[in-house]
Image 1 (cartoon, helix red, strand yellow):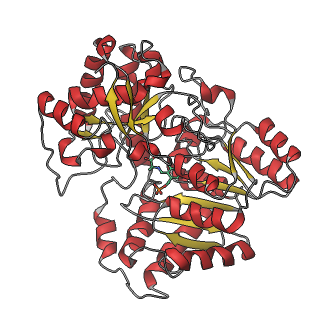
Image 2 (cartoon, rainbow, N blue to C red):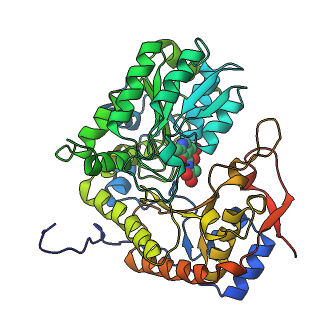
Length: 460
Ligand code: F0G
């Protein structure tokens, strides 16, 4: 881009459009009540701007669509697999590449292959499916974020870092009980905050000392690489792919939901160096996902991914993406809406505990705010708070560390005017925040309850 002009434009033109259906406020009141006040249970066509997730919701490029036409659907040994494998190996440097239909399949296969009851898996912060898959093996998912990662308003460059001291302590105190340690880049549950290369290298050293393999949960590896380039000393001159390679050089393995920085609508992988773990993982894969050269994906999905991993690392794309999110963050911050600072890689996170102090945590302030954003503007976000994380493995309740509403941006889907509209709606909701009421469960499933729970307004 010419440095003379300051406007960062979307680095794409639009070839195929998806119409948005507009609804009225009255219609949305009815639809949300019918959905049990659970935005997951709304029909997508009743949503105006859908920020439920950045996962699998992106727009593919013409190169990906073209690639799909050469999808090789052979059951075993398809060309498409080899192109996929070459791309993943080129970026990660890891030895064995096992495709899976999405991230949680990679998690289930990994943890099902290497964990036993009572084991501990530390991470900066486990994503909900990661935690659930570890707990499903009777093991313990331990979150060790740095202290600054738990303070939403605090501005720091790498709030996604893992607490290295706590990691060292965990490994020293639990010999033989930690089959692997993980780092999630970027730290999704902690606000989409990046992890510094120095922090990954530090974790690598600690793990090596204890003979514990280090895995990256690398769904958003390209976004993390971009932040390292912008914020970490000595990194500005490296390209995103060089930084990505430096991050993966610290890892013995990785789980990936390629629905994020794979720039595709489906896909994932488990990558690892260990021969014995690979053999068990491949056997587990065959049980439920498919043969190791397709892992539950079509050949054309593998083609879209082989192209997508590189597109995610394109600098013009990353600059536009991270800037759109930062821009919304600036609009909200200027108006006094409390958000997780600074804005992260894939989403703006509104701090509902700070915005709605009149709603106690057991009445789910973040969930209530998500409902208000839908009613007022047709915006769908997701609660990352006590509905998602409050239920403990023993069935008891413990408030989550933070009560956040995440507004996650699909990749290459929305434009500047969509973001301006978002700003307007959120500011409107903020002005009338005292009128927002809390919610209580009408039906609460035991596992991953946020997906299907139903609620009713308190005092209704
Ligand atoms: N790890 C992280 C950090 C994630 O964000 C996700 C998914 C997964 C693992 C699981 O991957 O969905 O392909 O099975 N995150 C999505 C989200 C769902 O909305 O943040 P998956």
